[in-house]
Length: 339
Image (tube, rainbow, N blue to C red; front, side, top):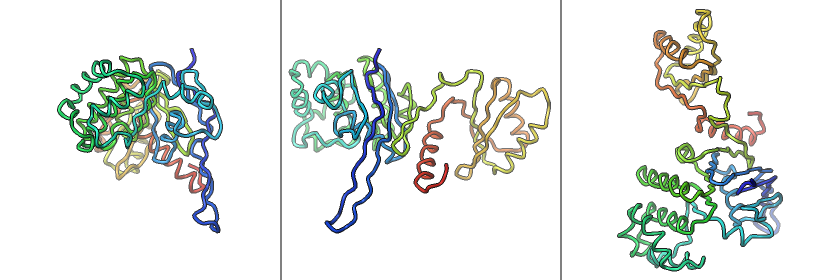
C-alpha cells in the first residue's frame, strides 16, 4: 500500500535578498535538503530538532503554503504541484500561532464560517463539534468573541476546527507550545483518541519532547534541513539494552570506578559504556545483553563505591539525547568543524 504522505528528495531553498539596490545580496538559505519521508495510514510521525532545523518548513510545503524548489510530494496519491486543491481538501493544519480566526466573531461563528467553506451544514457541525466543545471545557466560551479567548482556549478551538472536518491527514506544528501542563495533557489526550478514532495520518512537529514521546509511533530528527530517522524500540536489536544512569559525581571519578568494575569478577555480564558530562552532572550509558542480571549488581557496585546515583532510565530511545545531538551537529556544521 502506498504511503499517505510520500515525500521524495524534497528541496526547499529561499533565495537571498537585497536591502537596497546597491547592497550585496544575502546568500541563499537551504531550508530542506533532499528530504525523504513516507508515512502510512493511521500513523503519527513526530519531528524533533532545534529551531531553524526545517520542521515547520516541511509542514508548510506539505500543506501547500510553500512551493518546493525541487523534489516530489504526494498526499493520498495527489501530486502537490499539479493537484494542489486535492491536497488541501484532504488535510487539516494546526499551527502554534493561529491567526486565521476572526477576532470579532464568536467561537461558534468562526466554526460555522470555516466549515461552511467545506460545504458542511450546521447540523453536521453541531453533531461533530459539541462533544469536543464539552470535553475541552469551552461550552461557556463558544458564544463569546474570539478576542476574549486565552491562548489555551484559542488552541483548543483550532483543534476542534481541525477534528470536525475529519480530514484523513492532520499536520500539527507545536501543538502544546505556550500551554500550561493541564491544557497540554488535554490536547495530547485529544490528539491520541481522536486521531485513532478517525484513523488519521499525522505529522507532528514539536519542541516539547513529551508530545512526541506520548504520541508518535515513529520519530525523525531534523538538522540543517536534513531528516534522519530515530530508532524506535522495535527497531533495536532485542539482545542489547541500554540503561542511562545519571550521577552527581565528576566524570573522572565515574570512569575510575568503571575501570574497577571491568577488572573485577570474570563472571560478571559483559557491558559497554559511554560517559558524558552534562550540566555539572555525569551521564553513564551502559549497554548489555542481560540488564535484569547486570543492573542490580552494577547499581549496587556504584553505590557501594560511594557514587551518587541520581536516576536510572531504561527507555530504548531518549529523545532529549537525540535532540541535543542534532543541535550539536548543526552547530558543528555551522562552525565548519566536525561533530
